[in-house]
Image 1 (cartoon, helix red, strand yellow):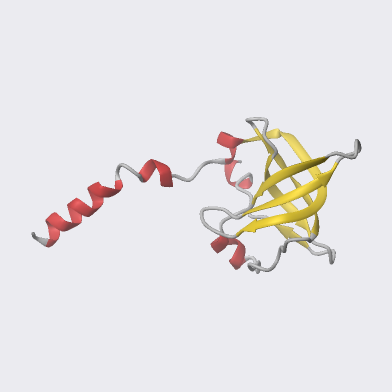
Image 2 (tube, rainbow, N blue to C red):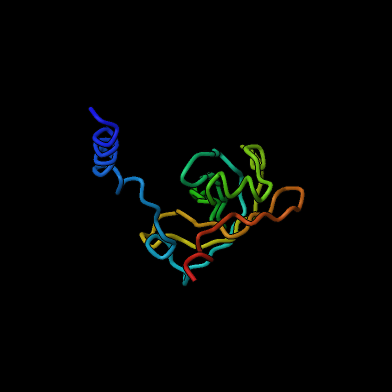
Length: 131
């Protein structure tokens, strides 16, 4: 098999899964008319592509809890902004500012995160890319 044939075969092999790898836009998933601010305790951190996620348990006024999945930027973008895998840890109490998902779930696209020591981090939100 020639190198050209091999290259074509390899390229065509990606077509069936390429939609799965497509990057979503802010406006496709989040609602800029639904800002949200909350504070709570981190229960899990997922530092992987295409975006990091961390999960926050929030105590509501009615004494019940709500769990939020918070999306940040890609690990590569966040590393360039001096984030690391240990910037957010399980048990940290954070304040999050962002936008809710259009589908009504407790999923948030984070804009800024206030760490326990008072440091404010830009979360690499795709909100600004959509403007």
